[in-house]
View: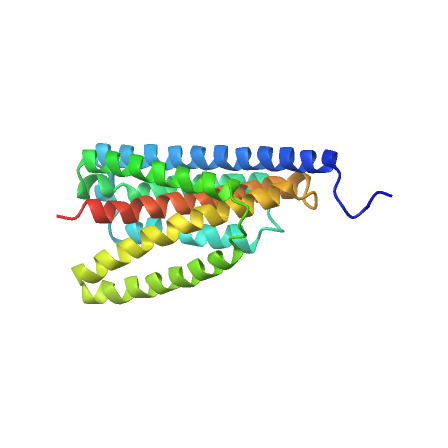
Length: 231
């Protein structure tokens, strides 16, 4: 007698294919967003527009992306997939404007080498997260708590201005976002294999997954840049 509670080979194959397509779409969208951010950042820096990002405009450009993240997460059920896509593109543009300062603060060679180091680290952890059979849920909870810790430490160091503490925060940031990359990829893989979400809801989950990986990559890049770009 067949055990109906045990998934059939066909079902397992279908779930793997769904997961594979979902993860592929997430990474494609993440790469598009990174491309928009990188192109915008370089253009703003090379054209001199980065110098216009001061005063009130600078604060708007810096804080607006954070507000858009909250909008995408808080209004997930209300927004259409198209609306979320537009918000994600605007978010990528604003992040590019905000990050254009790195081309003034660091040498182009340092930025390029840091990018390749970040891409290699991110890619390795993404493969690990996708292929591992270990449940990373508990690790994710620990990493999120550690992330809150470095955010608080960063705020404190904003007033202290300690170079040593900044270095420690940077190393911790690299470790945290390296781990979060594997955790997020595994979570995205699991969401993709689920048949609970279809149609527009799944399209919106693709965008949110791309946003999470985008944030992992950008933050990992910035923390590594702070380490290798130190005088």
